[in-house]
Length: 259
Image 1 (cartoon, rainbow, N blue to C red):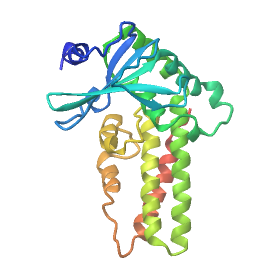
Image 2: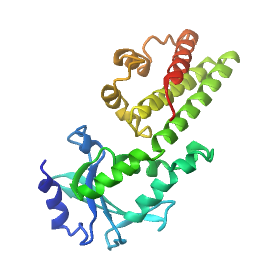
Image 3: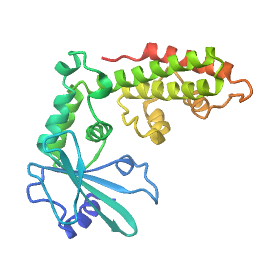
């Protein structure tokens, strides 16, 4: 789709405010991963709040404490347009400043999942309007501590899951240990991908795509996929698989830089 193909349905419905600073496609469509059943998601940024009878409000830990969205269907496909204030983008970037990172705040509590996903999307969106605004915001995002925050968060989650798996295995609870090991692997891979600038760990369905793009040297894709699909797990004797996964998690974690 060309830029005008994206903008036309919005203009026809009056969904682009006069004071728009930027508009961009986000999610799977922005990266070419969408399919015939995928929704189309667009972010619109302006300096003032937009409210209409058809819009819905989504709570956010920002000022103002909400964002707005509009939904419609075009050619049987669902579109969602989410409206952000320029000041809200500032607030999220402030939360991931280096000063905040160096204050030893808990990495997992800095951003909500929606904030994290939304801010990361600025870096890999498809621009429609406001290329200069996007270029400036992308530079701010790149210069922030966002990557360090999310990598640290994922490593902390992986470490917790590894400890769970070890304790459960020692207690003879192999079934729970299997699940914990599987979770530890997911968090470890998320940290690895985030260290390569591939974000969005709250949506693991895209992990294989991100892995192919990042191409981390520590683990080939085929080996990653074997663990992701739990190939080699013997349900009657899961301990060897659990041990191998936990060892791999620790080996990978040693290669991931948080800064």
